[in-house]
Length: 290
Ligand SMILES: Nc1ncnc2c1ncn2[C@@H]1O[C@H](COP(=O)(O)OP(=O)(O)OP(=O)(O)O)[C@@H](O)[C@H]1O
Ligand SMILES: [Mg+2]
Image (cartoon, rainbow, N blue to C red; front, side, top):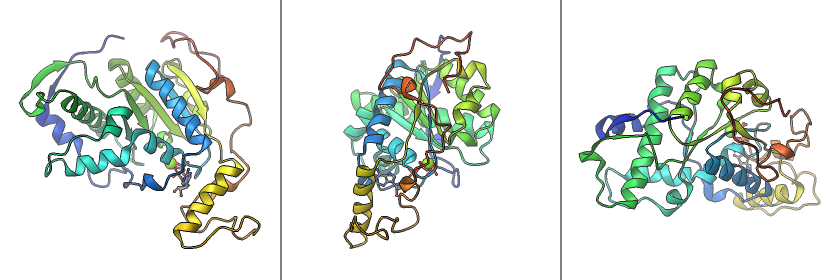
């Protein structure tokens, strides 16, 4: 689809960049405590594929198994938030992690309105793109530039967490944004998201990859639990049933469950690790892979 030229004015962008208070954006997370697990590597491969092919990807999995942390780690979201918060008072360069990730994470809140989505999504994508562009081209000054450009060329991937919160209009707006600007889009949600998306043929036809985020496998779970126990000043005794329980709320409680909450159908063919789908078309929705 041909991107519609957009007049981007730095001042307007800047106003829309900072999420409004209480917008539901996640508080900065200590990604440093995130352990790189097999599931995270699978997610990263999936995200790489969506980003490289500029598709829409659906990622679904039961609550509390690390979807949000994986997405934030992939996008280096904590680095972005720290840099963005300091940018008006320091002259520090955009971190290398963001040059590599070229990805932003956006989380709608429960009551996000279409108007808020219209401001927040282009706002964060434009801001990020400007920041990367300024880092790559030191002469570029968004404050002095009024330009006509095709959107946010330096933002390659938009990750929408908690996509289940979006209603039909919100999903439609994201599809429209995806069509107009050349970027990949990942929608993250609970099991059932993929079936819900199948009800919107235009959106569904653009889904190139779907990815089931699975609960942590036993060795990864043991490593994550051990790290949490260590944070609390204890060491994990793998033989003690009590130690195999999570040490606090917010810890990977749900990861220890064996149920993955999915329909049980294999997503193997629809994960980026195993298949190269044909390009999506805007006319005929694919047969449901689930
Ligand atoms: N790889 C990991 N390393 C460290 N902690 C982890 C890891 N995976 C999961 N956790 C723990 O699990 C908790 C839940 O993770 P997260 O919020 O990313 O889950 P989620 O799948 O997004 O859940 P929800 O569907 O409810 O949004 C985290 O706060 C963290 O304590
Ligand atoms: Mg989450």
